[in-house]
Length: 474
Image 1 (cartoon, rainbow, N blue to C red):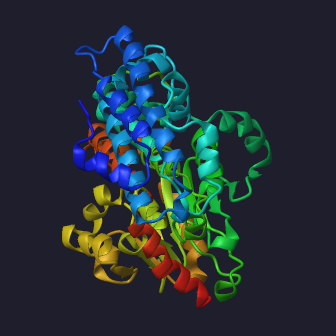
Image 2: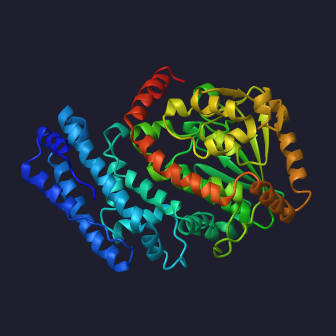
Image 3: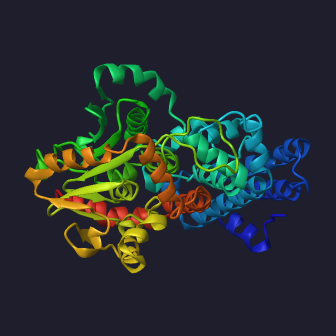
């Protein structure tokens, strides 16, 4: 049972909370006694009790000014209330996440994507996750001014992924083709090209090309690239006339790199700083498009305990300029990487203050444990012509030779056919990263990334590195 102790009650009173408001929260906490068994009846009853806690906590938070205007005492009080509400939500989800997931998916018959799951949960169990409106409000304020409502989304998805059956079902649901992709497939097959704004897809013979096209931001990723990117990957995998995929960046508009192809600048730090990047971006990206590049598409219904059965193809990466952060994460799930001489990749997690996707799970397989620790914890940059980088990069070429290298790699990738490529990818992957291992990693990732995304450390890091770099025009 979660309760306020005397010291915590004192913190709230010093923050200016009325004795009545503190008493209401204490009373609501005392009334929340989770049932021993997770039944549907218990879920309904305990959800009502939890809602009393959420309402009492929200009422307390409403007595203080908006986050930027709080004094030190009010900030401590608000953090205490938010921390208590998070404890309650996690206790509730720890008991009922699998039952809630069963209800939302209608007994595991209905696939539901993670970004939709959290909003359906908000309707089913009010207060457990924020509503669409609450998230929309949060996305209108800078990162430094956010209350962190989205943390509850990451926590709940973490609980689902932590449950073997529910988690495996969710991972499978995220590998299904997007409805938009299925609607656009006939058009893509007819025209051989599709402009999705921040992403472009093109068929060149039997090669399906996905081009980053977020030009003002050096082909960085953000909420605006997420759906187009996954759609383009879906199309390449669904088109029967395509045997292999290519991931490449278009030429950018930045003054320093005008006219140069850039693979990816990683996370859009401008949007992150401005508060426009949602927490579910991280979750959706790694469970969705990145995992589809690695594992392919799930076209058949989920069969618990069965080996992976996905439609997958060989993927080639053309690394030009740099692959920073998320760009480097993508290299780890591709089958063949061609790098332009003098290009580089890195994982500046220390500067960004977040977890670099699934890189902690995958990076050491390529560069070794020590080098991976240097890259993630100590900001090491890997020039592509160094021995460590060559364990990830297959081929280093002069810029003028990139097109010919892509053609050679594409010819090699399509020589054995899609079926054998997919079978061998599955066999190779089984020795490195089982679906079970990935599920467990993502359960941890969803929880910890929420802490990182809303931490004061991230805000300070952005001010220190991102703002300073932009002032210098870099």
